Length: 196
Image (cartoon, rainbow, N blue to C red; front, top):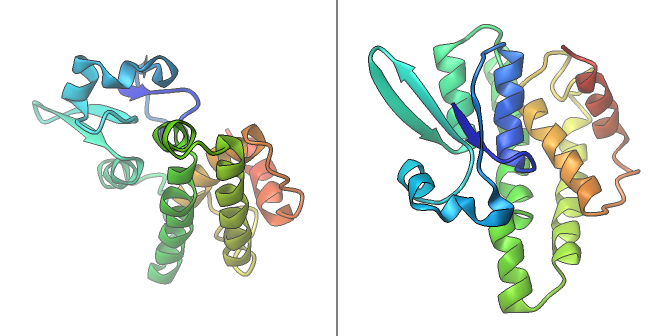
């Protein structure tokens, strides 16, 4: 079971990884916009009151996995084929670095908890806040991707970095970020959207 929210970037990454590995799962919606993440039953699944949470059963044990990166690493170990990482160590490290630019350098600035704090406590414009960090992060990402990009972010193989890219470009559009300068990222997005 995947406890997730349709507009959550982190949930979207995990859905892409599951789809790429052709792993069936039950979609369980957690309505972040209605505060369902704070309900006792969800907090029992994840004390941080976040999504995604992947419930897996293995060898008679059930585990609740949290955080998209940890879930992707688990999926890679439990279901290594097809791989979300290229064979070379340097290339795998590059995939992880690209993913982290998004995962820790962009997405936290646009998540619901941060935006609510910006609106309610800082009394600032949420959209301007998110737009600044998204634009800054995508500019950095484009520079990092360009030298090694092929049809995907690292060569021609779909990787964990590509799982992170699609939700981030969706969020950029959602927050009205002018992303016309990110030609390489958009080219990769179009290729990936055409995959099974």
